[in-house]
Amino acid sequence: MRLGINIDHVATIRNARGGIHPDPLKAAKIAEKSGADGITAHLREDRRHISDQDIKALKENISIPLNLEMAATEEMLEIALDSKPERVCLVPEKRLEVTTEGGLDLLNLTNKKESVVFDIIKQCKKSNIDVSLFIDPEIKQIEVANSLGVNIIELHTGEYCNSQYKIKELKRIKDAVIFAVDNNIEVHAGHGLNFENVKEIARIKYIKELNIGHFLIGESIFMGLESVIRKMRYIIDTSQ
Ligand code: PXP
Image (cartoon, rainbow, N blue to C red; front, side, top):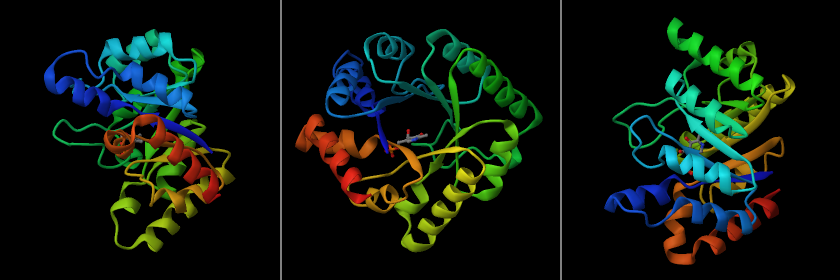
């Protein structure tokens, strides 16, 4: 199971002062040497954390794959084709949300949005950029993802992480994983994961990648980034 480190919140801290410190690229390099298999960064439309320049710097200076999270818009497609990350992950974006609150609702895409999603999938494939869709763990969402022709999905684990009814939420995730794998779709997962709640998710052996950010960056204040990533890596490996 690969571990992708989301470094957005290094940029959140940097931007709080409007300067250049702390540098997300430095965090990415530490992640790389601490056992991360990839770097994830979300270029939001409002640029509240990661900037266009960060994406360029990451792409030019890291040797593990870059997973660019972005909204399904024409502007972002242009940036993706220009910066050529190894993968783009399409996420929903609402201006006032503090984080990505749910997955893309593929069942209720407007015609215009659907054609942009389709165009992103087509153009990225042409440029050898993998495309993943961030969706809730629901069979119906996966059916639409399948019909759109994507071969990777990332399941939103936020509800599982926040819920008091973990067994029920875990079952939803497991059912979704099995359905996706049966349809030859590679499954990733992420959102809200920490040292504790990651264990059950890491036991789902068909999940190929976890993307984790906020907890790790927060905890690195106390433990240091290298130690926190190594500990997460260890927990994931020993949970399987
Ligand atoms: N995966 C996706 C698609 C996300 O949007 C996010 C949050 O930016 C994450 C994973 C990581 O979530 P967290 O920061 O809660 O670990």
